[in-house]
Amino acid sequence: MNFFESELKKIMDNSSILKDQKYVGRICYGTINDDLRARVEFVTLGVSDHYAGLKTSIINRKEGVVDSILLRFTDIWGKPKVSNPNFREGVNPHIWTDSGKSDWYVFRPTAADYRKLADSVENYLSVFQDMAMAQESQDCTMQMGT
Image 1 (cartoon, rainbow, N blue to C red):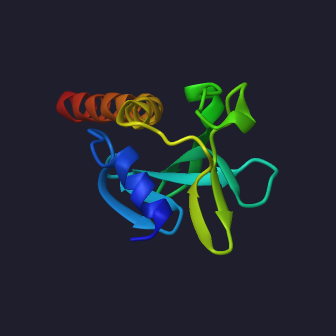
Image 2 (image 1 turned 120 degrees about the vertical axis):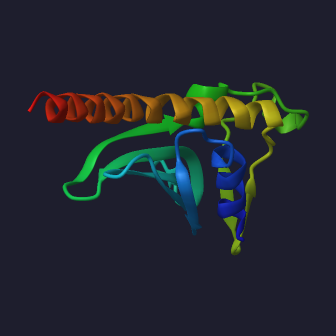
């Protein structure tokens, strides 16, 4: 398991919504229901090899991408203070890849930070889980009424 897969697993492993997770490179795929899948991936935001956010996409297996959201680490965690004197004002959290090695740059997320990020992803996924459950309930009601 590479660094990105390991980090995604820390974020998505306890998801109550995303089932049958598969980790491939910088991406986590999973199932929301029979028709909906999700793709959670580390993305750069204009600076090569600086992964500063997670893009989460909802994919209908028959129709393609339904919706997506970009969660910037600074929107979730702010600009955390660090002990490094070169960053007195804090640092914009990101993963940096240099010479083929990837790691968090200066800032290291805590278990609480991972949980906060996971909660944001889970909150987004829940919108589509709720829609899918409502659609299934409506389909069931229509079948019973016929």
